[in-house]
Amino acid sequence: MDLINALTPSSLLKSASNAGSEISRRVWTPSPLPQRPFRVCDHKRNIRKGLMASTLEDLLNKARETLLLSGLVSLVLEEDGTLVETEEFFHILEDNTVLMVLQKGQKWTHSKSISHSFSLSGDKPRNSKDIARITFDVYKLNPRDLFGSLNISATFYGLYSMSCDFKCLGPKKVLREILRVASAIMHGVGHILLGASNYIRRFLDTGDNWGPQVQITNYRY
Image (cartoon, rainbow, N blue to C red; front, top):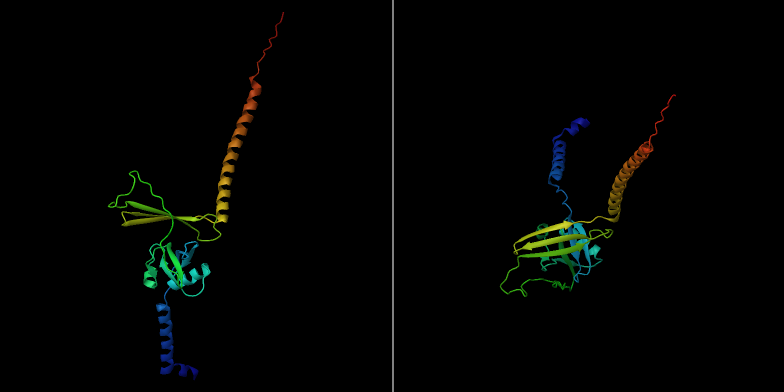
């Protein structure tokens, strides 16, 4: 009787509907977005932190937590103050982009860092154009990192840009690499000392036979 009830049209339709819903849920469920590296700073550029985020909301929450801020905050590009407020614009940002976190009432300002330029011909002419501009940025992705990571960005003729990121290791990894190098050096020195010891022993063993040889001849009268 239970088998007959299970085979009724309503039961079959309900089972097919549940199966279709499960398949649709599995097919249309989006995969998690990958985490990307970003750097954030406060409006005075005194604090710089590195963090990983996959969405704009995730970045806002982590930036607020990292910089110990409360309330509503907004993100702008640190270099020119462009507001980052949509997911579409967020996803076209390059990795390691520097963003400034602004609270209510705060505004973006130009960087007051002092730059030194050197020229062989004295002052730069007004109608001249920059050939290359290189910037160096030292930051830390993890507060426990022993040394800061270095990012080098270069712009040529104001059109072509390239960047290189040198990530430094934490204290444990640095210590492990130092011990590995020290072990290799000690291993090599041990081989050298062992070879020198064998050579000296061979030299001492053969040195006993270098004395003058006296030949005694018996004469019979």
